[in-house]
Image 1 (cartoon, rainbow, N blue to C red):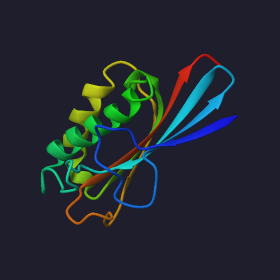
Image 2 (cartoon, rainbow, N blue to C red; image 1 turned 30 degrees about the vertical axis):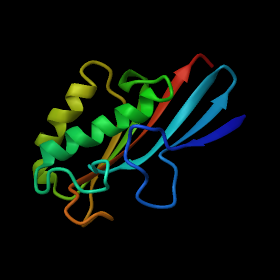
Image 3 (tube, rainbow, N blue to C red; image 1 turned 45 degrees about the vertical axis):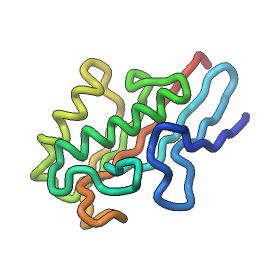
Length: 134
């Protein structure tokens, strides 16, 4: 089993001492563990303060870039964990979610949290994807 820690080009740099993704190669397949992502631009500024839809779209854009850098896409996601600061805004989150997962629905956990590491961030999302054939 081989582990690769990566911060792919084309996505904002990690906001702390962590890797955006850890790729675990198992047999002829791989698992991608994508760290929690918030809606940051390339300079580390929050996108869409107060706007759940804008933040969710940016988060999924970042996750899509991380997955793509490893030959994967949203159809490869098997688990998603979503952390929302206000469950009253979950329908706006769901709109962005459904654009990424129109048919295949990964296992999912969603929880409301009091706050996230970035002030004004309304959500953080992490995923696990399976690529290749085991």
